Length: 133
Image 1 (tube, rainbow, N blue to C red):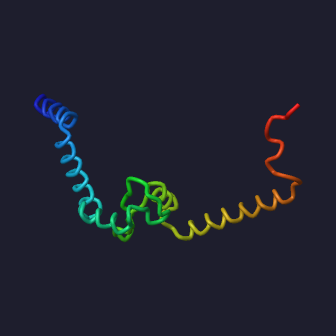
Image 2 (cartoon, one colour; image 1 turned 120 degrees about the vertical axis):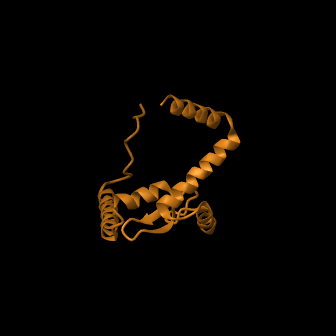
Image 3 (cartoon, helix red, strand yellow; image 1 turned 90 degrees about the vertical axis):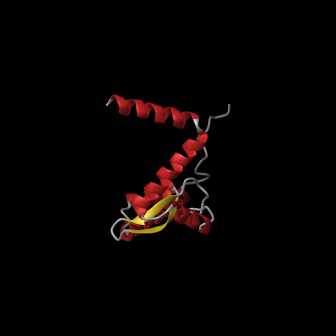
């Protein structure tokens, strides 16, 4: 156990002080992670990234890092997404019916807001600031 602690301490020190080693180590971890989780290499990821021009497949924004979107049930890689878009799909459990209901909800609330604002007199933001005397 003491030897393991000593080796871990040496590894932490080398990662903290040797930038080339740190970069090689992170690249190796990333490559192993991609291979294990998605069956792809870092070169596959880079090709996808280049094909998408560094943009999220949903919102088309250039956010970093782009994560690998994959189908949990059918076990295949789809595209690269920014984290907010990937989390959004995950929260809707990749269910198109739930997404459609979410869109319908947003549209209905936008219509209700426009009707409510139209029914008021004047500017809806008027009167929210301090009064001048």
